[in-house]
Image 1 (tube, rainbow, N blue to C red):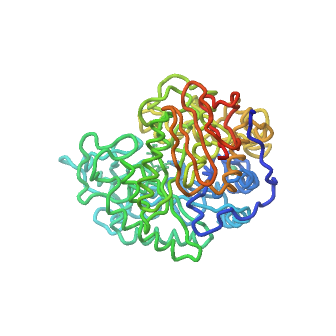
Image 2 (image 1 turned 45 degrees about the vertical axis):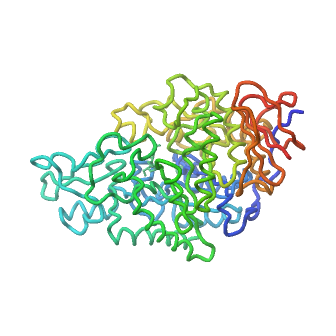
Image 3 (image 1 turned 30 degrees about the vertical axis):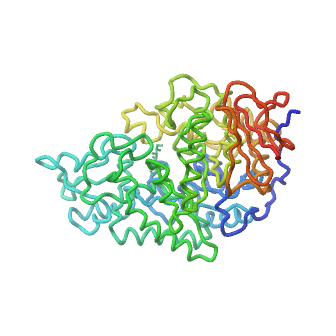
Length: 567
Ligand code: TEU
Ligand code: CA
């Protein structure tokens, strides 16, 4: 028997009603779809995605079968870091729409049974935020400067930065300002781009303003927030030097790091949790925290702090059974110990798309950046096969999951974007050596045979990043009618997941299996098997095939294939 995923039967274009888990702990099992606004769908034809575009595609999202949407920053921003440089936290960027449109969108999404999470960026503002503009104008020692982290420089004339901290995007984390009288003056801290000055979280007005932002959006019906750089807000008193080798590629390599993952953060989260819990239908948080180890991550999701956290250990694991099993066990154990559900994620707007990661030789260590991958071109067919298997693995694991827009279409990293198109600040700040993250942010292909694949209306401007012509095979429309497509697989898997009592929150039990095969069961009556080896393996005893990521081979599970079985 060769089971293949079948297309969804959910009615297109009609609200599908409330999600199955319409209880207050819906978030423990939720599949959340990440909408990168700029690249999702262009409603007004200016070449950039917008709220009108998302609204027009709500039927698609509802029929995909996800439970919630996480909307990347849609606030007014000079876009020095694609919206993570915010100049007004309680408004909508004009290029994306209006506040009225946002409100209408939230209500419509709810009618489709989709909950809405927004992005909260509490670590920094834009340098165009009125607070920062006032700080520049007010001069050294002023109360306006106290909301940020200004310091005099070192060296005889203050010409050296105050310490050795580095920007995540490359170079020093400090920029010197020119004082209102025209003289070279103080330096301000920016852990990211110079256009993203870090806020001073010791300042009561900073704390109060973020709380106001939370309430503003909660009052508009938003169901929760993803917390940007949740591990970065608090800095060690005195801003001590970093010293050599303090940062790994994905988090602090040392305990007691001067600006990542500090213990004092947790007090802030407890305040936010109280705000979220004060609503009749409690609102939820997911932490974006790149920390050194799973025990540290578990601290973010203790009962009175944030609800869930992205599982970057899973995202970074190579396509190898030993690494994946270790991450799965550690995640379940450490998060379970504090009563939090695990989550799973394969890609997002900051990392190389997993089709392109898995389509390369798999290292014996975690990986997520382009620079960490071998220079060889990816085998996209292999990467796609593995991505299908990975989707079934992820959606069978206990807890919640995140799908980055385009994962469900099997999009790959666009690694050959023309240099003049690159917009990620990493490109410039790395001295043009690291191409940055634009390759995973290319606008979605919806329909048609050539770019722009109906990303916008018929006479729209060219999308802000060019799409590969080869995406004609990957448009949502092309895949909707192909039973073996990535989209069909996601739709089938999400439909089964929503109705199967074993899936979502809970526990798993491993079966004995060869070293490069993962087999586990979930109660009641569900088995997932994934073959990460090079030879076909027999299926475990079962009562029927629910779904397979590719054709089975005379009852055997081929390499790089996953299967869901009824037990
Ligand atoms: O990312 C935080 C972060 O640490 C990432 O920059 C990550 O280390 C990097 O992308 C390499 O993977 C968040 C947002 O997701 C990112 O898009 C923003 O650029 C950043 O914060 C600053 O707000
Ligand atoms: Ca637009």
